[in-house]
Amino acid sequence: MLILRAPSGASDSLAHAIELINRDLDGITDHLDKLRQHEFWSNLHQFALAETKNAGPKAKLVAADHVNAAVRKALEMADEKISSHLREVDSASDRSRLWQMLHEAAEEQMRETKQPKAGHGGGGESA
Image (tube, one colour):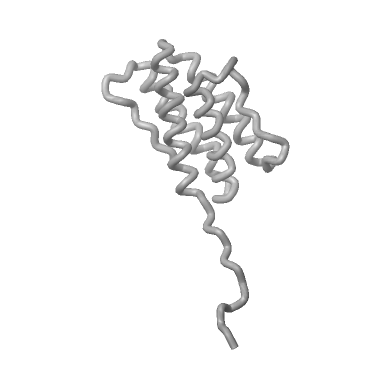
């Protein structure tokens, strides 16, 4: 489960947005298996990183064509929820802080959901 914590001294609007985003992302990802969760967090991580850099106009969180359909739907729902909650955050600095927190949390979730690489077969015994 994603855990964003409101920083010390956070505004009420930022703290409330964090609470709602935690709830929403947990609900959005709970039906995805670990591989799909990793795909979800990888896409959210890239998007949040771009948002922290203010890379151009606000784009939607839409994944590439090769993304699994369930992950695409989850990303679309996340985009809708995050955008809605961000509209309630009062200041640009709080919105920026929230994107930074989402970036860091998504990076952590990527590590937690990463699948180990399959070993190569062959048995490893020599004749």
